[in-house]
Length: 515
Image 1 (cartoon, rainbow, N blue to C red):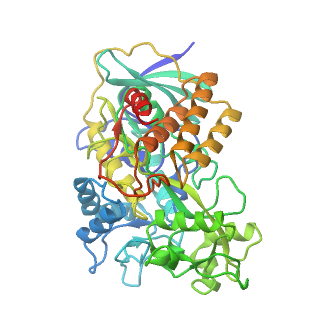
Image 2: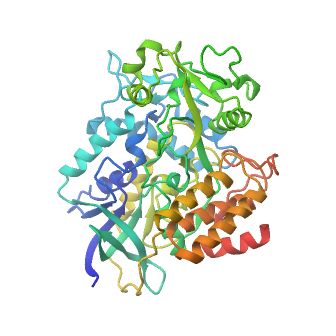
């Protein structure tokens, strides 16, 4: 028997920076505060990409910088597909968002005069990335936000809880969800649902994101009929540490900002040389998609790829980049004197549930923020360290909208939980996605992937993870060009700049036309 509860406030799915910022915003009112319920599949500070973020938050925080310059870099990285209004909003509100997190207790690195220590990262024209302890920004920021959430009497957090289906009334409005909490199904009727479930990294065999981040929020929204934007644009971080771990540890972008060099053989090997000049004039500071394809090409040619920070960082590794240092040392690699073996890995999803600038989706009662949303900020390729900023800025905006929404009149239609994918099938899915929807794509591989998805669906039902994978594959097949994080060997040229907007129903027709 499924328990039923009614909650006259927003239910927030996900407890990363976007979700918790939305909860704080939704309950921060001049009048009597609204209640908010946060459902997290894991204990707070685990299982979300926010806590794993290394680089920091990009914002125009210095006198030498300006939001317009940050916007220009964001637009350039987005390869023609950024929404200018969304980018302007992000970069204009960005400095205040960073300062608000600092006021909550996030211990950003500071100079003696109290100003932020700012680092340069790839494709940024200015040093504008506020960091914590070199590579610990995500964990430190999340610790401060979690403390604020824990202290808020109007926010309830339920861990070991995940959504299994969105509930809708006869008009299509989202009026609740079926959740699995501590292994038991619960039907929750609520004023609104905010999706903050993260990206799609876990759908791939090689990823830097937590295993729990596997596109389920995207899949649930699509099953409810929401419009999905740009699902084909998946960002591969160029420098995951290649030591055979799942997920793969990350060698932060900031290392290349400090001057680390990519070589195609270990240090001391007479055949090893710096190779990025062969691929882009900006070398190691080229956009992420360019660097990822360069590393992929060097590895495919049998030469390998190694990040040499022995001169750029050297003895300063333990203090400047403690997370990278610890990951390397645990695998017997001393990055102070040895280069780090690296490989591209899924790191971020530019696509997601289409939203306006306040988190509203195409379905009434459903909002989205953070990586599972697509505001148009990132275009075809996210600029480094814009992700935590987007989560904070747009999470707060979604929370403010949810604060004004009230419980609907109509009850939800009867619905059953979406099926889960058994582990063996899920691992097969991950291998197929990495093989055929990875750094390099073509029609043969994408059609092979869609055939594999058909077989998995026939055997296991329409699981949200399969829905998310299908949207990525179908949109990648339909986009017959190369742009940003999407590269087709059979269509290497760039064509007309148009975003993808599609529903799950329309994606079926889209596939039949493209195949």
